[in-house]
Image 1 (cartoon, rainbow, N blue to C red):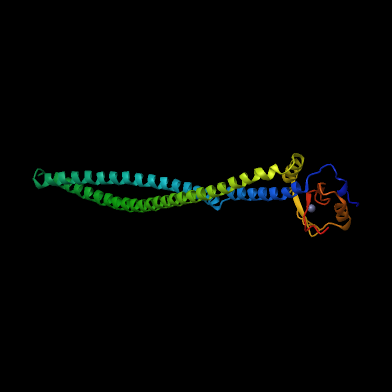
Image 2 (cartoon, helix red, strand yellow):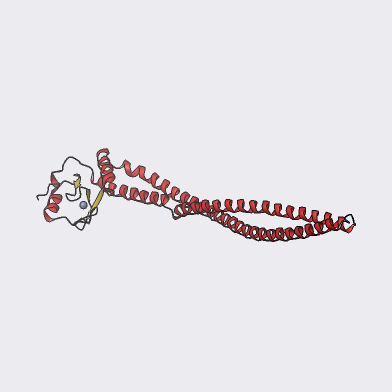
Length: 256
Ligand SMILES: [Zn+2]
C-alpha cells in the first residue's frame, strides 16, 4: 500500500507547537493517572466491603439484643412464678404449723398439696437455671457482636481518614497539573488542539514522538517509504502515522 502520510496537508502548525503537544499529552496522562488513583484508592474498596460486613454484624447484634431481652423477660417471669409458689407453700406450712388444721383428712390433703407445691418449685427452679444459662450464652453473643461492630466502626473511621488524606494529596497534585495545563494549551493552535482532543478521546494516546524511526504512539517502526515522505514534508506540516492515525511529532532523535 502506498503511503499517503505526506498527502495529509490539511493541518499545519509550528514545530514548537507540535512539540508542545507532547508536553500537553504528558500532563494529561499524568492527570488521568492521578484521577484513576483517586477513584480506585484501596481504602475505597475496603470501606465498601467493611461497611457491608458491618451492616451484617449489626443485624446479628440486633437479633442478639432481642434474644437477650426475651430471655431477661422469661427469667423475670420464672422468678416471679417461683416466688408465688413459695409464698403459697409458706402460707400452707404456717397454717399447719399453727395447728389451724386439725381434721386428719384435711391434714392429709394439705400434706399432699405441700408435696405437690415442692415438686412445682423444683421444676420451676430447673427452668430458672436453664433460662439463666441461655441468657448467659445470649449475653456473651451480644457482647461479642457489640465489640465486633465497635471494631468495624473504629477501622472504618481510620480508613475514612486515610482516604481523605490521600484524596487531598491527589487533589493538590491535580491542581498543580491544571495550573500547568493552561500555558501548555496556550502554545497550541486551536485546530491542532481539536485534533488532539479527538484522537485522545478515541485512542487515549493522541500523539507519538517519532524516535529512532518508531512511532511513540503505537510503537511500530515506520517503513522506508513513509520515512521518506516525512523527510520530504515541511517542518510545519502536521504528520499523521498511517498505521495508527496518531499525530506523529518529529524530534531531533527521529532518525530521518
Ligand atoms: Zn503509530
